[in-house]
Length: 268
Image 1: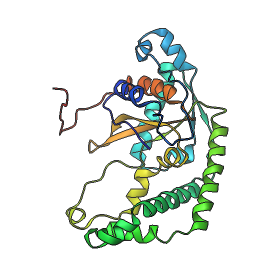
Image 2: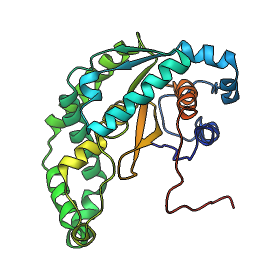
Image 3: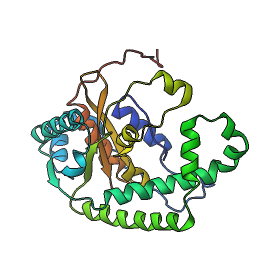
Image 4: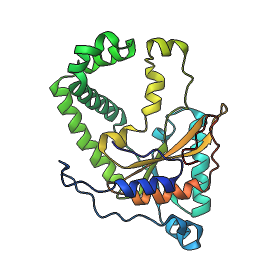
């Protein structure tokens, strides 16, 4: 999915406004509705706060806390601050069959990846690739048509589950990742790295948005003891980018971001 990597929510909004829509030559079926972006400056006024207070956030505690303790504690702290400052409502929901969705997502992206790159990999990449890539492609090549079709049925099933949640809430809230960034080892630089434990933690909460095509945004909200950033993710219903940007901006105003040790000011 195409996304925007920005330092501020306002920058993300500007970029989204620029890329929103479609070209006449695009072979896509879904046509986006007219863009209706929020005025983020309204958050500075009481009227904007009243609008934010009408937002309902959905949280599945078992999933929310399926991460490192320092991650979900930081996320809870910000959720509490959002409720106190803006009066947002947080409700408890259940997302069924998350493990089945994870497997279906893996089969889908693995099959699509091997279909797109498999011929080139077999022709040129096998000898040049590190062990992690070779092991991954060996797994991707093992998926069959029946497994891929079953994964798409699970995609449809999960979309139903999520749309039922969006009947009760505007946004599903999760941590962005299940752990913070880990150091890159010397052996990883030479041979690649195949760490499925940390790898699964890092993508745990991206699966729903990626697999189902739902809009999502991540906001930096704090840091662990080593100074690594922690993020909070907001997942919206189809074409709910305006609501996500509004709420993300409200959350951003409650946090303090540090400048990275290695920083390049591209505008200077």
